[in-house]
Image (tube, rainbow, N blue to C red; front, side):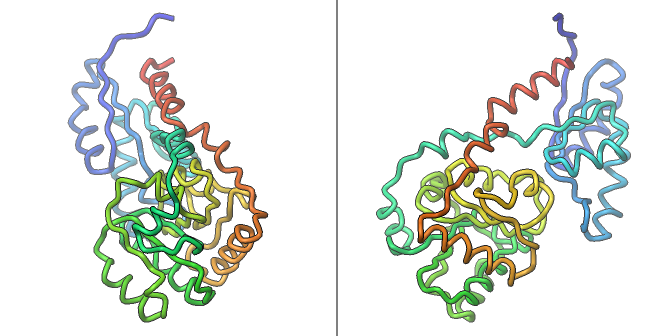
Length: 293
């Protein structure tokens, strides 16, 4: 099949995409095609009203200057199909992950845990992400304090403005000795292989890469019941979702998974689910869109 020849501009992130699409209006008249990947609209079911007032009008306007609007989760895709008047609206599940790296990484679990201060026989719970309000790590801390199981240790890989507040909260809850802030890390694959459970408690996500990496590593996961996470996680042997701020339900989810881990009854099936999110799979979809086939 003969491919058409034209220039392509592909933009990401709301502000950069707004500026780019407005700047490319003249170029589009000369044949340039403008692509925009929305990594999670700031307006979504349950979003604050200000998000709808600020971001929705901008996205709606700029969609008129967009040849292909790519969404990475199904909720955004349905919204864009209905309300965004781009020439084409497409669904591509994420930007791709190196699933093989996270599945096949080898690590000395005892040594890695010793490095980050977690006992070899502990149940290591891991989160990866910036220390900010959106990531909602305090919910996990409150749940662990209620469970009061000294074998549970919680580690977060990431930096952010809430570092001191999270440390203070952990100490006030009596779990400071079981809370580990690891800072920025380059060994996420090794940390996943050293952990027993992954938790993503975020308030908002588009399609979270760290969750997919944890699933590729074979970890059971618990995640907030939000857009994007629903695409990846069902209530099955890969893990559970829970209402974002419901500490009581999160406690039950953690207990269920930890009990399964300790009795070796928990057989994770998230790895197979990640085939559709591999980098090579996503790249092929994007190339097909570039060819406008």
